[in-house]
Image (cartoon, rainbow, N blue to C red; front, top):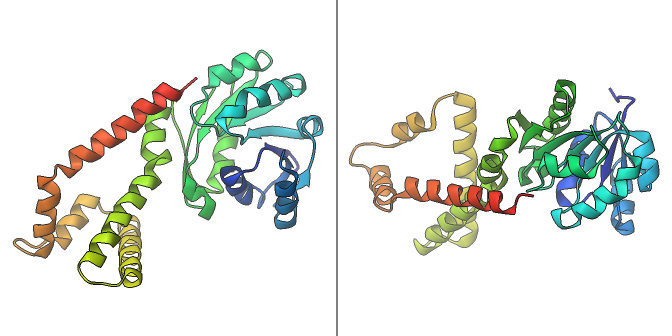
Length: 264
């Protein structure tokens, strides 16, 4: 059922349009998009209204700021005269803290910060959600419902958002990197590139589905695949010798450190 409240989206690039594709199924959505050609494409694709910034702010209850961090200050300056006490301002920009946003909008503005990831484009995203100083529980719940339309939404304290950025925000790249290496290794064993790609992707997809459907721990399933002295054990020994687990930890820790450095 379509709700009466209008959700306003400012900017609709790759991530913004992915979120738009989810929330438009259950909400009235209006978009303000600086790129006119992109705006026209979105209007052909989705049942949305294209509005200028003042009208969008007047009509919408929720303002989703889906613009890049480098233009965020400019957008906050532009919307400041139009933000009312009834608004909930939701940011998807990496590294932009709620105090930074609150300082640049009228006093008491209710701000929600989110960290979605790329699989939102196929409805399988993971979004971390944290509330600003003035946001209510109802605001947080609303944000969770919106982002649940593109995957899983979790709420947490803002002190943990850099960890979320490192784990799920950057996480798809870790998966793609591993798959890339796995495919290359397969071709070196003599399999064609096409066959390698098909086998690796389907093996990964099947393993993930088994993990989700079985409810068992990853370690339990790994042990089930691994026979003592067998082929899997030989492969896992190589991973262990290369300190695979420590490498993963150091990589994610580096991502979290960089997220902290980029925050403002």
